[in-house]
Amino acid sequence: MTQYKFLLDGMISRYGDLQWRIGEWQQVIGILAMCGNGLHCSATPYDAICNVQGDVIAEVIAEVETHGEHIDDDDKSCWRRMRLVRAWRWGKTDSIALETYAAELVLPIWEQVYPDDLGPRLAITAARDWLDCPCDEHAETAKKAARAAPKGNVDTIPAIASWAAVAALHAANSAYLGNIDTVIGRRAVQAAKMASMDIQPNLNAWMLARISELEEIKQEGE
Image 1 (cartoon, helix red, strand yellow):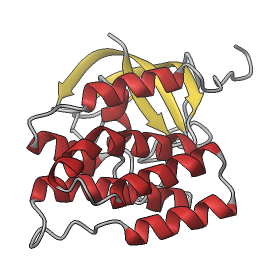
Image 2 (cartoon, helix red, strand yellow):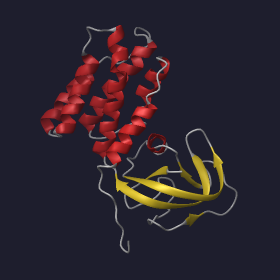
Image 3 (spheres, rainbow, N blue to C red):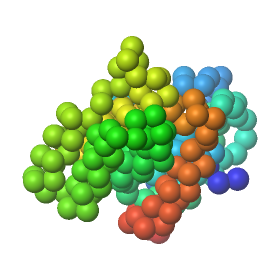
Image 4 (cartoon, rainbow, N blue to C red):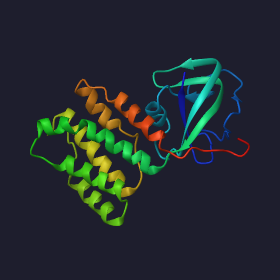
């Protein structure tokens, strides 16, 4: 079964300092413990990026092969042995594009409640414009759109629309900052769940298509 793992630049694990090489088996000793001791991966690329995103930007996405003892969680598994099969460079622009796509998927949720409020749509458009041309002008437009977008105050806005609006705001904010400050697409996924939608298959399909366009990493000796 194909599984995925995100790494930092230099093919280094997000947690710890394990150095990976494509095709070489890695192994841990001791008792396996989820998020404690083991080699971790996920069944889908979206789960994989959610498990590493935070205060750093993952820069490599890898397809992995696993073997032997393992323990499973909802969105990841922990293995005794693992090796990289293929790897690709994943940049900040890819993460921002994913954030923007996720916001687009739930934009109709906001517009069904507030059809005359174009703030979230303008925020997403600004993010798209920056992705097409990441220049200072478009970054400034994204900044203004993020500031003008509804902030999703749940005291005055229905929660389902609130999550959708904040998803759009963060897409524009990410374009302005040139960075991702939270788990990618989390707000959009939450909005979708409240609307009895599941957008994670869409996000995974988008990521797989994106991976097919990325620069594949080739290491010396391959």
